[in-house]
Length: 278
Image 1 (cartoon, rainbow, N blue to C red):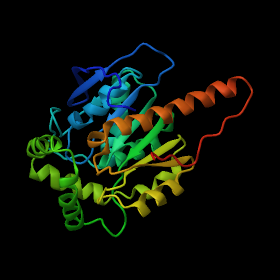
Image 2 (image 1 turned 135 degrees about the vertical axis):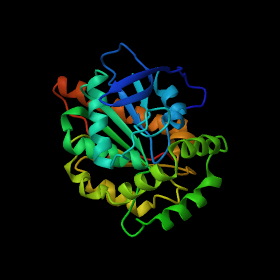
Image 3 (image 1 turned 90 degrees about the vertical axis):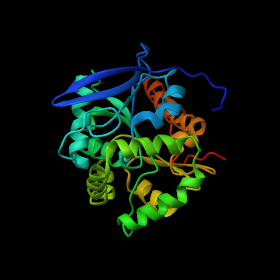
C-alpha cells in the first residue's frame, strides 16, 4: 500500500462500559460487506499510535480504536486489570458499541488481550491480526524486556517517542508495573490452539523484542495461521511501518471475502500459508 493511498480522519466519542468511561476513536462506514476492525493497543500505550494505520483502513472498513481502561484518556480504575479482565472488558465494550462480531487487530501486549477474547468468545471474532506478539518463554522478565525496548527505540519513527513518553507518564509507574507483571504471567502460546478464526501474525524484521523463531512457533500453533514479515520493521510496525502494515491487513481481509464469494459460487479458493512483503 503506497504512502499516497487514501486516508480518513477518525471521530471521537466517550462510551460508558460498566464503571469505565472509555475514549474511542472511530470511523463508521455503511458498507455491509466490509467487517468492522477493532484496533487494540499494547503495553501502557494508548490508541493514539494506531492512528496512522486506522486512518489508512478507514476508507475501506469501519474502524474503532479504543483506549483500554487505565490507559490514554479512558478512566483509570484503582485496581489494575489483568489480561483476561481486559479481554472481558473488550467483549463488553464491543457489545455496548453495537459490534456483535469484528476483526481484531492487536499490537504487542494487545495481542494477548485479543487472543484471550478470541479463545473464550469465538463468536465475536471474524479474523485476528497479531502484530509483534509478546512475550516468548525464557524472556518473561522485566530486565530482558527493558533491554529489548531500549534496543528498539532508535529503530522506531522519531515521532513515536513523544507519544510513548506521554502515554507511559499518563499510565503511571504503579499501573505500568502491575500490567507488565500480568502480561509476563500470561502464556499466549497456550491459548492460540483454541482460536477458530483465521489469524495473521505480523513481525518487523528488525524487531528486537519479538524474535523470528517465536512468531514462527506461534504461527505453527494456530489452527488457521499465516505469517507476514515487514522488511526493516521495528517493534511498532503499526506506527513506524503503517502503510505496509495496512497493506497486509487489507490483503488478509480481502482474501477472506474472496473465500466467501468463491464458496457461494460452488468453487474453492485456498489462501497462502505464508504471506511476505518482499
